Image (cartoon, rainbow, N blue to C red; front, top):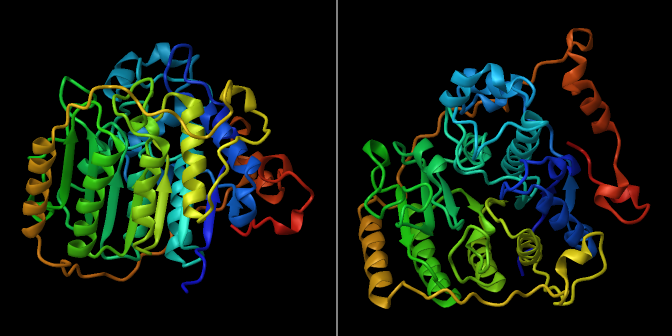
Length: 429
């Protein structure tokens, strides 16, 4: 028997209180709902819970351009009218609005993914979860598709310090374009994205013909799907492709983006996946027993997002959850049935057997072109990023950095636990 996986879970209550604005489909409140459901099912008792550090601008600039990071740091809803040129240049506006505490929101969700990668690197856990992360559309110099900072790229860069090859898998309904673009020219990261493609569907990229270039040729895999794919076809295709990828590529670590907008009934999605179908992909990946970083992503019917990520937390903990949702702060959102399972979707499945078979053959053909487990030369491991000591006198009090430093000294009981079991709290970050 293999010893039980050690699981680190990252959460900061502040991430759920930001508001993208009226009528905006992205509702970070879904993260509070997920967390409270995780607590209600007592899953926190089987994991180590951490509050992530707020990523420093210098850490965000490991991938993003310094001017873009500085702009995100500086811009506020009150001052945005002064920066129309910059807003256009960095693609901030309707999809990616400027809202209160925008930069802090980015620092928290990116900090969670970076911390998750570092704990995996230092073998302090086997699986690390950051449901607040997974914002896969952000580019080096611009926001895109509700994403400002690409935490996944930052987490993968961290993993690359210790692993010659990292596999990135994306099951969001939208193509993982920002991550693919970041690693398009390298064989050290293989990106595999299963997504809806066609009909002008955002972001419009992710054709099966896009396979990477130069050293990265054949190391980008796209699985373009049509409306209405169901559990059976999706999980069968997923298992076939991912098993072959792991066998051929032999990654040292895996990053799995679990966007929940691929679920049936999503406000912006068009697939028919049940939560069990979605979670089956997590089961498949977990079985490879490789260091695993799991993030959230899209998901716009928030009660279903919370259900999905809670079930998937259970899957990662080998814990089956009762279908009846226990009492919790957000119970009213799960009315009238108060059940975990959601009905399957009824969108017509436009993915014929022959279409799926063609896609599968194309992907497997491309995989044959990569050398078996490419021999990447590892350089000396760079240090975990140098974090400057902060001189409190020089700090801008508005930036609340000193408040955050104090926060690290305290445990917010309400956030993690429902009792006074302070001793169980692992806050050794």
